[in-house]
Image (cartoon, rainbow, N blue to C red; front, top):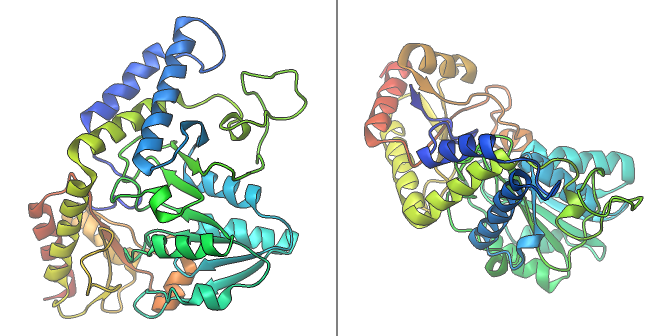
Amino acid sequence: MIYLDNAATTLMKPRSVTDAVVRAMTTAGNASRGAHSTSLDASRIVYDARVKTAQLFGCSRPDHVVFTCNSTEALNIAIQGALRPGCHVITTDLEHNSVLRPLYRMQDAQGVRLDFVQADRSGKIDLNAFERLKRPDTAAIVCTHVSNLTGEIVDIARIGRFARENGILLIVDASQSAGCMPVDMEEMGIDVLCFTGHKGLMGPQGTGGMCIREGVEIRPLIEGGSGVQSYRRRQPEEYPTRLEAGTMNAHGLAGLSAGIDFIQKTGIRTIMEKERSLARAFYEGVRKIDGVQTYGDFTTPERGPVVALNIRSYDSSEVSDALSVDYGIATRPGAHCAPRMHRALGTQDQGAVRFSFSWFNTPEEVEEAVRAVGEIAGA
């Protein structure tokens, strides 16, 4: 199989990741739930993962790294735990349903007022729109770093400066950028950074989390066992326990920690450049094929390693199925959990076929994918 669905999850992992998971499954007990060696081993795994995550993302306090099952859970905790009823929030058309649905829920149930920075037909947004949409009661901006559909990179540093100058909380969805390009909370002015472990970080599924700037208060979404302060009626107030109820996924976090080690050793800019090079080569190969329509602004090399396209009027699911069955190429068709973006692009009925690249893909695989698209298009 030629696996080009890395924006959904990375299939190919460093060997060190799988080795770390297997090792943890035979040595790690329940973190913070005992003083015996296996519990302490699990606690060390979790702590090491916090430290490495904080270092990777420029988070000043490792104890403000909170682990979750994925970025969806992290975004739900951040959005529902930081926003207050009736406040005003600015978000964008680029967002994934992991952002949209919690916001819509708070809009319906708690009167949160939403404004959207709209995307144009190429999937770009006007950053000046944040200033135009700001109100005296604007409490937060919730924004993706990279579109999961077009690969469009949002200038988070610019938005961060605007947010800081106006006392607005900035919550960033780094699902598509974490591990694929440098992300630094301090430099970018990010208050809450939500990430997942199973994409660019090359970790196992079921891992993810958030990094929280010191001074930001987020209410718990769930409460329960914490291993500490067991006689309190409510969840402990200190981070990270405040937002981590229940048994930690020490096995998965061992793999996530190994994935971060691989990224740091290889060099995140080295990884970024290779992935972008593969995506660019694929784009250059398909853009002139008759009947192929690509989406996004390719005038800049600074993009996520994603190319979305359609072939003639063919349904995107039919194209993706043909790629899989006839050519052994894995892609993602459909709406990509990004309904507002598809409406902006005019692809809400057809969907799109997304090709997404990782460190472990090769130029030869790109050539084969270009050939397959050409044959399906009848070129």
